[in-house]
Length: 220
Image (cartoon, rainbow, N blue to C red; front, side, top):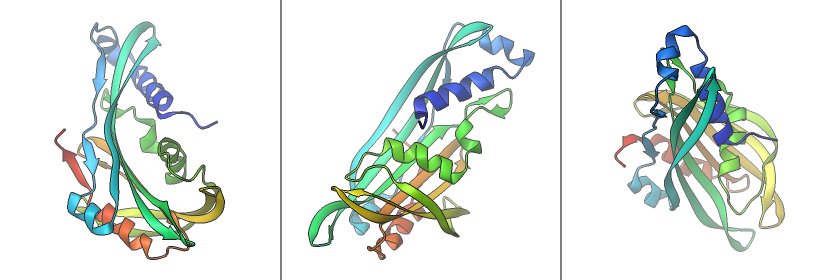
C-alpha cells in the first residue's frame, strides 16, 4: 500500500532528527520543530486561457510526535493546488483532465534535507501525488515512461517526464498520459503533475503552459 504523505513527511522528519549528537539541542527543545512550505500555483491568466478551473488551493498542517531518545513534536506544512477541466470526451462532457502543484518544505536539519520526497523518482512521486488528487478517474495503472523533455519553469530548464497508463473515467477504461516535473526552488521541493486522456492529444500543450506558468513562492 502506498504510504500517505502524512506518514512520509513524519518519517522524513524522524530520520532528519536522528542525524547525530549535533542535533541534540534541537531535539530537546520544548517547542514544536516547524517546517513550512510556500504556496505554488500556475498563473491565473494561464489557468483561464487553458480552460481549467480551480478545485482547491489549500494548506495542510501535519503534527506528529517522533521519538529519538526523547519525544519531540514536529509540525510540517504543505501547499496543494488542484485544477480540473471539463471536456467533451466520446460524446459526453466529463472532468477529463487534471493539474496539481504541490509544495513541500525542505525540512533541513543540521544542514541536510530530511524531506524523503526529494530523493524519490518521478514515478514514485506520481504514486504519492495522484493518491491525493481525487477526480472522476480512479487509480492509474500500468504506468510506463514514454519520453522526457525540458521546459523553462521558474527561471531554469526543468526536466518533464511523460508516462502512459490507463484508468477509469466515469466507469470506462481509458488510456491516459501523465506529465510530471519535480525540483528544488527557494527552500521548497516542488512537484507538478498533469493528466489527460491519451485521445485528447492537444491537451498536452495546455498542461505544458500551466507548468511553464508556475509561480513560487506566493503570499498566503
